[in-house]
Image (tube, rainbow, N blue to C red; front, side):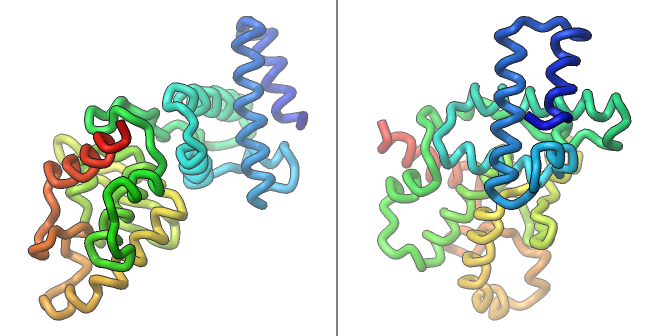
Length: 240
């Protein structure tokens, strides 16, 4: 165990006086995150976990989704990371809490069954994975899974909202409030593959393609929240 994590363990035991069960869960979650970072060459030793960025945490959550980790477990891990980095912020070791803006997962009424993107894509009955609609569906599902956006927010994305280099997306929520949300690498890759396919279509349509909706329906218009819900709901129904 690295010194950084060990210090946090002592803090939980001495200052917070948390139960042994809770303490063990917290430390296990932090160590699991550290292992992910190390195995994917983000860090060389556990103490470097202190340098994690929001997008790195989002990559980790995307990995958990793909491993079919239960939502309640994912939310617990997010809470553990928040507590850990809040402590590091308090001690002055970091200037910002990278986990502070990471959202916990909400129960999505259109997703009663937990599926990986690959499973959901298969259930959608994709005939040609290189078709525009199939590439669009995969891109939508990848972004949906890795970002935690609401379906309405997903439908409202414009191409200009994505920062591909930083793996960030600008989201306009209720009341036109904007926030920046990290997205996983697989989501960025899927979006780029989709955009490459529809690039010529957008150019033929004229105008500034970057001011166009990100996800289009078969008529070349912005896809609706209802349509996205139908796609996700169809896959979920088939899984049951």
